[in-house]
Image (tube, rainbow, N blue to C red; front, side, top):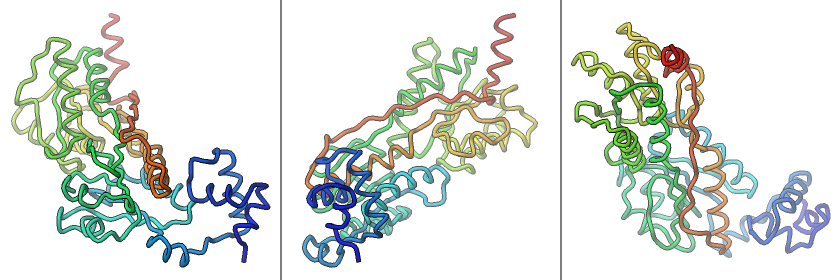
Length: 337
C-alpha cells in the first residue's frame, strides 16, 4: 500500500509539502498541488483515515444542504463541490432542507455529522446556522449575508444581474415588465426584485403592484403565475422571472394560450440552467457561475479545516446570456425602421 512518502517521492516534493497539498493548504502552489494529487492517483494512495479521524474527531465528510435536491439548478453546483471533495479524499453528502427545523439538513447541523457545511437553502434559519458554525465545523453560506465567526459568505451579485436583465428589456423598447417572484423568504429573490425595480426607476417607469406575481422557484410556480396573468387579462410587454425554472413554466402556459414568447411577449430568466438553451424559444437569462461557486465553497471549507480562515465575504459576478426569448432581432429591426 502506498504511503505519503511514496507520493512525495513521485511528485518530487518533501513529505510535508505533499501533506499540505493533499489537505488543501494554501502553503503550496496550485501547480504543486496538482502534481501531488496526480501522484496520489497514480499510486492509488489513500490516507490513513481511521488514525486521522481519531486524532481530529473528523468524519471525512462535507455536507451540502439544498432547498430541493431535484431541481436542475443544483447540478453544476454539486459538480463543483464534488471536484474538490474527491481530490481531498472526502465524502460528500447532499441533504434536503425541506421541513426547515425538522429537516435532515437541520439535524446534520445540530449533531455535527459532517466536518464542514455548504448551505444554499433559504428555509434554514440563521439561528440554526450560527449555533452550528464553529472552528471544527466551518460553514459556507451561498444564499445570504451572515456575519459570524467560522461563517464564510459567497454571494452572487443578484441585484446587479437582475438590473442587467431588465435594463436589456428596456433597451429593446419593452415598458410594461412584470416580475415573477421566488419565495418571499429568499434573500436572492429579494435582491433580484430590488435590481428589477432599480432598472425601471432609472428609466422613469413606475412599478405597479399588479406587475408582481408570486412564484416559488419551480416550473409549476411559473406556469400558474402566467395562467393568472392570462385569466386576469393582465398581459405584459415582457416578464423578468426570478429564475429559469419559473420562466420555462411561463413558456408552457403561454404556448397553451397561443401567446408567442419572443414575439408577443419578451421573457428573461435567471440562473442559465442547462435546459434554458434548449427550450423553444431558447431562453435569455442571467448566468450564475454555479460550478465555480461550488468549487470555491469547497475550497474555503478545506482552508478553514486546515486553520486558514479566508475573508468572510466573496462576491461573484453574473453574465447576461442573450437568446431568442426577448425577440431581440425583430425588435431591433423595428427600431431601425
